[in-house]
Length: 194
Ligand code: URA
Image (cartoon, rainbow, N blue to C red; front, side, top):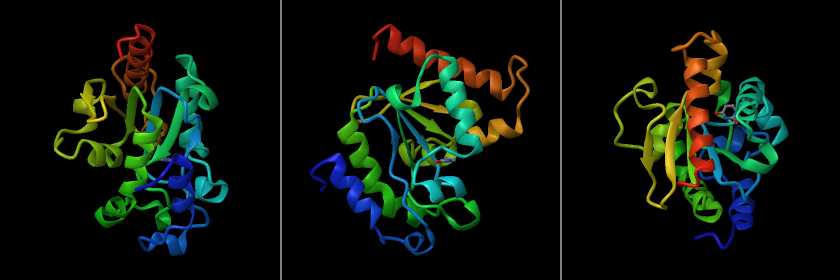
């Protein structure tokens, strides 16, 4: 469908396949490196992302990048960052099924062109798109490995906005569990087992 990642991006920038094309300031295609082994998929752009055209640059994004940095991953070198849908829903409401479906070709092409080794799903919206048969909660499935048809390994983790609301570093709490998950991703890449 798309000839290249650049073609995917250019088409996305002027997309009007759903009504969010009328309310967005900018579509937010990706950040980080297209050569990264890790692809991070969030929910949707928020206010800052919509204004800047870059994913995960607001408060929750900054927290996520800080946590990745703690296990040695840099945004511009080690991560390819995008969202399930590319345009901001008004008032940051959850994306509808129709919006997710309209945006899906962009995401599928990103996975096909970037060919990540590991796909990190941040939060329930990303999980509902890439693990559609999964009925368990993030708390139940986080930290486990799943498989994408491309051969990539998938891991679901807490969304960073949830971590902003649950900031205790105590063992067993979401923030500590997030570090367990990021450490497992790092271990997996170090062992070259993906
Ligand atoms: N910013 C993003 O780009 N995606 C999210 O899911 C949250 C904040």
